[in-house]
Each structure stands twice: as C-alpha cells, then as structure tokens.
Image (cartoon, rainbow, N blue to C red; front, side, top):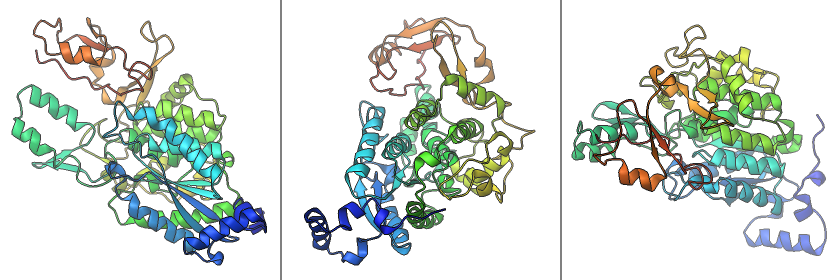
Length: 459
C-alpha cells in the first residue's frame, strides 16, 4: 500500500507552504508554545472530545483524551483536542435526540475547517456514537472511535442493579407499595457506581458494539468497562493507530460497505440491542450512501440467533460480565458464520482476521448457537393498521405471552395526558389493556423522547 508523503498531508496547506497565511498559522502554533518540529510535516490528529461535567458517561474523557494524545505523540503525530457537544442523555430536555444531528454537524465542521489529517472520536452515551460517526463519515478523514465503555455493575442491598432498566422496575415496585420511599431513595447511590455508560444492553452498549462491528474501533474496545485499567491502554493504542491510518489514507469510505453495515445490524440482533439502533444505523448508512431499511433489519434478525444473555433481555448479567466473557470479539466469533468476515476495519485487517483468536470464557453470558436465548435476533419489525410503514419491537425484552395479545386500548393523547390520567381511579384499564401513548415520536415528542417504558396505572 502506497503511503502518503508529508507534502500530501491535508495539514500541509496550513503549515507546510511558504506564504503569508502559513506564516500566520505557524506563528500561532509557536504562540501556543509548540516548536515547528512538533507539527510541521506530521499528521495532525483532531481528538473530538464529548467530555462534560454534565455527562457522567464521559467523566473520564478528560483523562482519556490525554492518553490518546500520548499514543499520537509516540507514533509521530501532532494531537489537538477539539471539544464537541456531549449530547447528555441524563440531563438534556426535552430530549437528547434533538442534538444528535447537531453533534454530527459539529464533528464534520470541526474536521473540515481545521488542519486535521485524521480524527479520534470520543463518545459512548446513546446519541454520541451515531452523531460522531455521521459527521466523521461525511468529513471523509481517517477516523477511529474510542468507546466510553460501560460503568461498573450496580449494587443495592446485595442485589445487582442495571442502570437504565431497573429504575423502571423498582419505580413500579414503589408505586405498588412493595418498597418504601426510604428504600427507593437509598437505591440512588447504588444504581450508577462509576463513570461510564449504562451497563445494560441498552442504547449506549448497543451503539458502541455496532461501531466496533462496523470496523471503527480497535478489536474489543467497545466492551472494556470505563473504570478498567485496560481502557486507558486502549486509548493510547488508538492514538498510535490513527497516525498510521493517516499515512495509509484509510478513510471511512474504504471501510463502510454494505457488508460492514450488515455486520453491524447482525451483531446488534445477536446482542439483543436497543430499538434505538435502527434509526441510528440507518442514519450512519445513509451518510455512507449504503441502503438500509426496516426490511433489511427484519431479514437479518430472522437469520441470526440471540446469544448475549444480558439485561434487560434476561437474567442478572451485565456489560461487565460480557467483558469478562470475552466481549464483542467473542460475540463476533460466536456468530461468525452470519458475518461477512472479509469486511475491512481500522486495524488494516479484516474482521475475520481480527477475531481469529477470540475466545469465549463464559458460555452462560455468550451462549452457544444451539442454546440461544431465542432462535432469532432480539428485534422484530411489525406492520399493521397502527403502523402501516412498520414499527419495531424488542422481542427479547418482552414476555412471550405478550407477543400475541389482544386487549382493549387505553389511549393517551400525549405525555401530559398520560401524567394527568394515569392514576385516575376511573381510568378504564384492566390487566389485559394495551397502553398507547400518542405524540411521542421524532415530530410529536419532539425529538423522539423514548417514552417506551410507560408506568403502570396504580389501580
């Protein structure tokens, strides 16, 4: 493979020529305390950092960015850190989904308007992996993703807790009078015990795994817990690798293909991932010019079994257990017959080459193909009078009896109506009722507020 020369670097336009503009660019670098030998003729690596003091998923990115820089320096590059919108799931109102595309635009413009030759993308909280990837694909520079990683498992009174899922379970217990207000309050300190993303198989874990399946992380990076010492080492190795990717001119367009998109969808289905993966992966695919629709999701889900035994799909296992069981690479190895192993990745090798030595250390977490959690993937596409163009359900998180159910509909016009009438003793609801919340999609919400876990009426 032909390697770039220093004169072919994009940043050469800023620092390598002899004109008045380059004079200004170099003088400002000297103003910052750098020597010309630090940056001239070297790949300039933009580290797009979604750290924020209001983003607990990304608290550790302040130091992870420094560890990425260490790798860039070691490989002979010049790192520059560029802050970007954190798209904070926990705090932003009315919904974080409104800001995914803002992050995509910000990532693209940060890359295009600055003297960057390559990008390292730091993200993890739900909307940040797709937002960063969308922008980076459009920018077209070599890029690699550093996943935030899951937080440590939750614990309360000896019970394992899963953030993002058990809050709904125990809130229902509170409303039913099965736990006290004091116990509910005490749980706050045990459900999220470290920095990092939710440790269930929710949107964050799903999208980090999907980005790895797409080929945009170092092998195994998506499953490393945020607090594990392997995480900063991964960040440093990522910094080293992006410098080589620039010299190799390994761009997103040479990695994202129909095969890699199918791999991401297939891995998501075998993982039992979030329904949110569908709009995010469609958006990523569109940026790359790869067709992807609900029919393709459904077809791929029907051919691969669900083998990741994780909450909220089943049992007590969480992402920390998934990591100890072998993580994403072990999952990909388990379902390798359903993947296109020739797909290229940021390592410069194929997916098949990356997973060749992967091992599974716990078959109660990553199940054998002949003993899956369910015979098909964790998501299914359904169509009918309520959704003629299609809707998505997470079959893996539903009781089997609910997959074929008839009951009276109890319809709420919007979220305000839900809050107003839910506990009305005259609400015409029975154990067989189907609760329907209108005006909660991308337009009506606005911005897809993800009110899928509706509270149960008190009666």
